[in-house]
Amino acid sequence: MLPRLNRFAPIALLVALAACAAPDPATDELPSMGNFRLGHNIVVADNMQQVPPSRDATAEQWVTILTSEIDRRFGEYEGERLYHIGIAVDGYALAPPGVPLVLNPRSILVLSVNVWDDALGQKLHEEPEQILVMEGASAETAIVGSGFTRTAEEQMQVLARNAARRIQQWMLTNPEWFDVDPDAPPFRAAVTDADAAEPEDAVDAPEQVAEAAGPSAGGPVDPAAPDVQPVAPVN
Image (tube, rainbow, N blue to C red; front, side):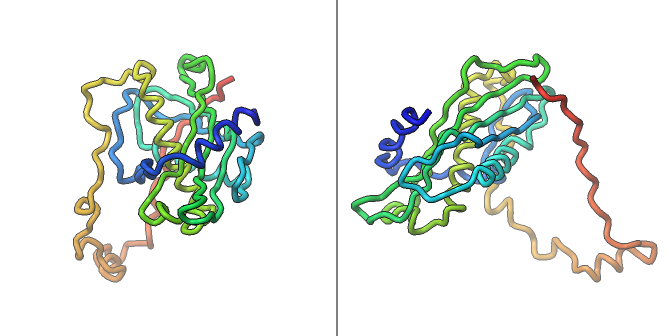
């Protein structure tokens, strides 16, 4: 695995600045995914390798942040079939501070991805899909690099979010897996600033809520727990 990862290092460090960070899936347009519904979301990083130059990150950190971003991008889909996503972290580089305009290292993440169909009880492709993810450039990192402007945790956040989007793009190159209708509208349109804005009087003060509830109210009501059905592991 090490020789294969080393081939990616110069590409990652010299990549053009055209790439951008993926938008937040909470506000980004989500494409239609047909019958897709997320079952198991499994991330492992036991055999990952660090590609120098790089800041340090633990396997536990990568598992936590990638699991969160996969849930964030795929968790809203409510199709009729369960699919499982398995991810292995092969390697990473978190760019340290460099020399502006001379040495401007970029962060990368290398993953191997598998997708299973729960009903069929099998993987949908023969070999793991290896995905190389770039951190991308922004106005603040184009000159001095993200090693100066982002912490290691922030770099990981950007890489994990980009990875979740790349995984979705790869999955949708196989629309037959999910019975995607090519003419279907997006699952959810992008949320604009106007959509997200709340009227000033949309939220009542706690005193107004208690008064409106009347004397029979016994205190705040906890939201109902989501109805999550257990899923049998896939061998």
